[in-house]
Image (tube, rainbow, N blue to C red; front, side):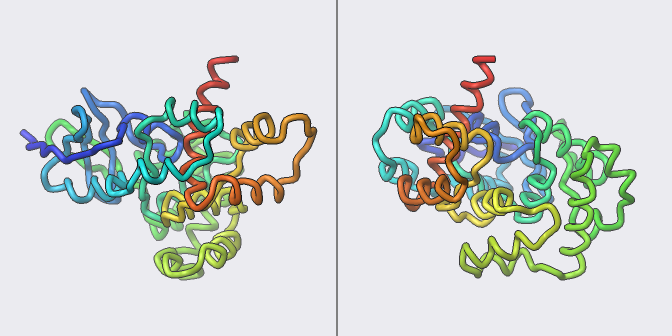
Length: 281
């Protein structure tokens, strides 16, 4: 029997955080979710303003879920406009997770032209086929294979995980990281712009994926990944009447309008608009 420990989690919603399109491998189990944090099997469930987690992983989970972020103060920095107000209400308790850099980078390399559910299916397929099986009592999950492990996998084997053209980029990037072509941990000590430039040198990494990694792995909370959903909300809400707004203008607007926590604003808008649009279809 696994002993669960209650960890205070004010201003937090576990389901919205894990299902908001920033991480893709947590699966519902019982009253909570089961998944891996690096090489650690973790079960999470929420009870009121606390989460319950295996006692040995309490600190790990609290750090991963960014329970120390001063969320109310962060949200108060946002401009007071109708789109933001609705998104904050819809996503109440959503936090930006601190992901392991390689896992985050590799997962977003599999994301181009894919929906959240498809990215999750690919992530779980890669984990189950090439990751390490983690078991504890009734719980089971799989770690994400390290770059050194992925670098040894044949392309045709990766393609079996329904990666399509993304398989070559994932494999090439794994080989570069495994060979020391880029030190992902060292990027923590670079400026956001320096880290973005270095990430964009990796196969398949453009500015959008680089910003995802900066936001979700390196806690650069000012980073704004502009994808289809964010482009849609920016154009429909903030640039009404303009047919085509250049990407550079969208980036400049986001940084100036949403401020130093623009990445948080982006995630709330993304979560709300993605689900709102899906319901309209």
